[in-house]
Image (cartoon, rainbow, N blue to C red; front, side, top):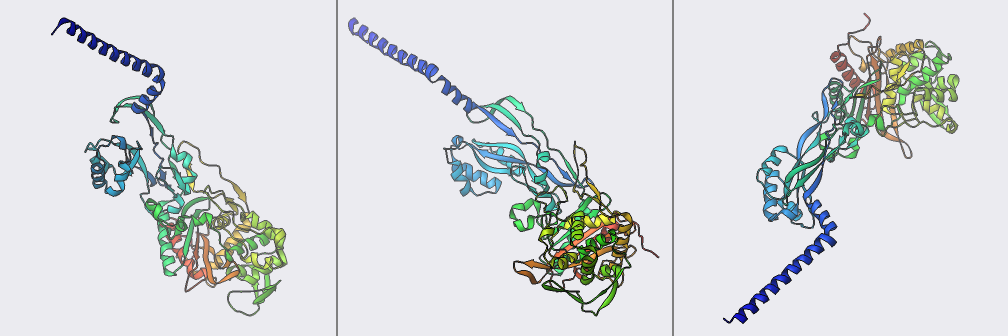
Length: 557
């Protein structure tokens, strides 16, 4: 080849190299100058990832330190579809290990428009570990906590539940969420193109949530629920509610509603079953409310337990006729007998002839009806009390016997607890304390004088004694004081035929009360009276509680 041709080829090659170098130089200048900021941001987003570290949720304990709500270890599995080469194979493998549907997983894993999709939130740790060992590119794992209720249905309505993000959604889980939830942490790490961690550059530890100790006793709670289940089943009732209080300090020892649900499967439970009816729902109390009428008249000095009245079987009150539950002739009854025999006519007579509407309305308020108790539970109802300026001519014939007024079970239990506590009302509460915080300050108020409370206790003992309406509430060896209630349920057009709420509320031992127990049974069938339907349930719950707490007998010999 001629030297001239060789030189020409060398010069051409040099020109090509020069052009290539110039192009590369211009590209470098473009990338490092014009695109530098955007590319730097992209590189950072691809290789630096910040992950939230969930905080462990605090445990809820009963008063004996038994856990009612705990955090269990779980593993959350997520995928980056942009890193998955064979979505179908990964979907099949993950579905087989986690017991999921591969047909559901595949579309998510094959969607390369997303870089994050959940495979399973809070999966079983053992299954997640088995899947992780397969080393499937694009699948990632991080520890998480799931809420668990080790006693299942026990206190489910009171506890409520926490959702998949460990935030309280109902009940005490919701009310105490700020304390229970803690504060999440964060971890910033550098990852390789496959998403594997290379180095942790910044970390903020999570702060564990505070533990909560309740006044509830898991054993008493479980027993109350069992008794309610049996009672609701026996009478074919719609539902039942029970409250067990310590009258001395306002501690709620049990708060049960049936039918119930398993807190671990709250998503499957109808909202109807999730409500804590003892706090959120109201009912017309019927004859248990006569305590307020009698207490007011005694406290005002208008009657004594031995004051007697001549009582016909029925009375015309404005536009309605009221009568006693059982047919009888005109009788002479003392105030004590009016309460023990649950005479509607007697209670109305005391209210009309002695107490009057204004003073009765004042005593209703003084006992706490129409006001929230402050128990610290979400959605508490204050009840339904007609303002005095809206009373009609027939109201004085309704309210003294517990009609035309609606109360919550916790209000009624607290009212009877005040009488059991020598006339001193103590704010009922279900939270004993939160770890790291002091015990809550409770309201106290005197409702009646100790002497009046003692007179009422004696009269309430007569309800359970032979000849009273609550004989089925009697407990061998113990003095029992209480009151029956049978209330027809109101509807949109007056009272509903055949639908009643049967109730009993009382305390034991009457000489030095340790337990107040309220039972309401909604729409029982076959029998409607509180003394027949609710009193035996009271007896079963109270008797168990006395034995469990080792309360000595006090019956007079």
